[in-house]
Image 1 (cartoon, rainbow, N blue to C red):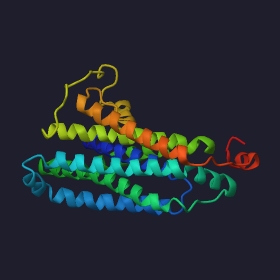
Image 2: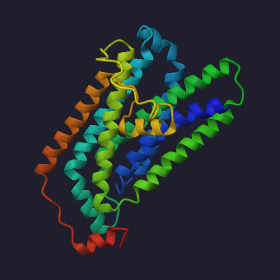
Image 3: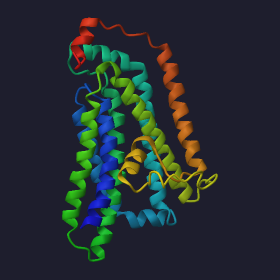
Image 4: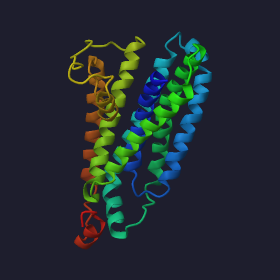
Length: 282
């Protein structure tokens, strides 16, 4: 039971942290709960379908179907998160001004929510399919108490994700969009690095030195802090050179794009009284 709980916990934690960052980044956007909830439901449904067709997937890609599937999902999520980061660079000030001045939900972010719905769905799809495949294998091997382990893992992983979300909401509004945008950039870079690792495993990309360093003695990939750092900032105790290339390229592309867009956007002016009303510290 506890082996099942640990694996499910790690998979749920990865999806939960991604969902938490997305939910916090869309704070104040109208109907964001509906979009995020729909993304979770779509991802869970897709995970079941992927698990049922696992044999066909592996056969279609000569045994590397799982690696290609994971890499494809991760790269799609990187593109969608990147689009949202650039969109927020253009509209973030406006959203912040409206939230501070009116203290009500902002509706102009709905277009970006469609892409973030897909990011949530892809995160749940990838982690959910791995959970289902693992549980199927454990059941075939005669393992017992699967439901107990599943329940413990889901509750524990979701609880940690919610704790991160609650912490992000405590950030003062004047810093909120800057912080969450930075988290999304690091999240996208980490996902790109992980996609590169899957492509290396499938022998579709050269490793370019494997590993570049080994920091497992300080922070192992399998530990809870290491797993959390891997999800949020792309930490890897033993990365390949190609992973670093993907990571740095994604960081640079989003940073340059945001700077270019941010430089074209006129500064938003918020009255001191409105800012004081919106800041929880006041």
